Length: 200
Image (cartoon, helix red, strand yellow):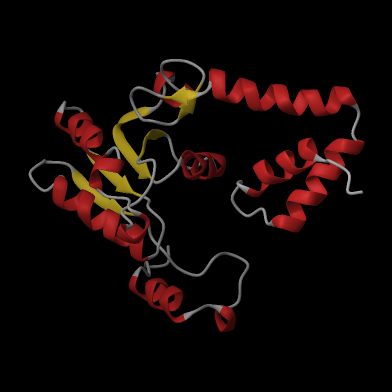
């Protein structure tokens, strides 16, 4: 007689709903959690509960925070005349890790992607326009991903800010440091040539 494993099957089913997790990975994770100590398994459950209870979007830039304003927006040392626009909080974190940017961010919470039913109303572009129009902003750096949707989103933002006096720039693209030209695709090579700079 087949054993009733409803709890295990339910866990596997929930894990499969996560992005990038297929059936086999979900099963491996479920069995790992089954073998883990009760304390470790409950610690994971509590971390998931806490992220849902405590995390929210910054009321100014829509980055993730546990307070009304994120750490970047609260930091009085940041250059408030520059706003870097990114698709997701993880993009802002990646740029922040470089240590080369000292302005503010604006997180769109997505990108224009008609095939995924993501339109302008699903993004925070109107909030960005309000921030820019409220004054004090001199430059908007558009750092959406260098792909069809990201480029389309960048063009849409540029159009929405067309009436403002701010400088609108796009992050440069090219060959990543440490890589080889022979392995770069045509788009990367085209961008690298187009965005070339005079050597100092």
